[in-house]
Length: 213
Image (cartoon, rainbow, N blue to C red; front, side, top):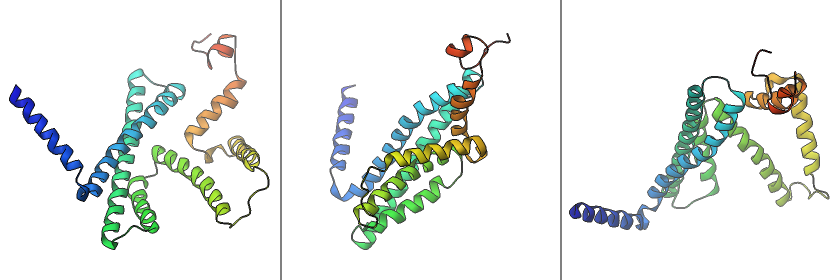
């Protein structure tokens, strides 16, 4: 028993010593990036899938839990694969050219995005739309910072908020099929289900009646 403990401690010391070797920094960063992508993807997707599944999906408890597990696994796997690919390509380019330049990040991420997120499915679609909204904000701020557009005299956020909400509700009311299914479900719950009730139970307690009264 003691021998097994000594072997484990020796292995642990060897692993820690390896992690301190700077010549393996790039390769080890790729591995940890894979780990962080998997963990972060699971932490982000699991609670979201849990809420959305129990709010909007029908089916047995087993089917719902299976759906949550599948969505969590897909998000976790894709993010892990992407980080692994991105950091691996970044390290390879830096090694080949002897230095890191901004285009390396763009190219590595483009290739990773194509390979990992190129499949048009609900999980990837949500991630891409999440990123797109933040890219638009980021590019707007960068354009002001670089002087390509003048600094607004007033905070433009109220106008942006008005246009976003005006556009999305117009699309929901008149061109619903253009919106993502999960957004359609959310808006149906908020704006259409609130038009229907039969008694106090489905007016305040439940969204819809659970019996056939």
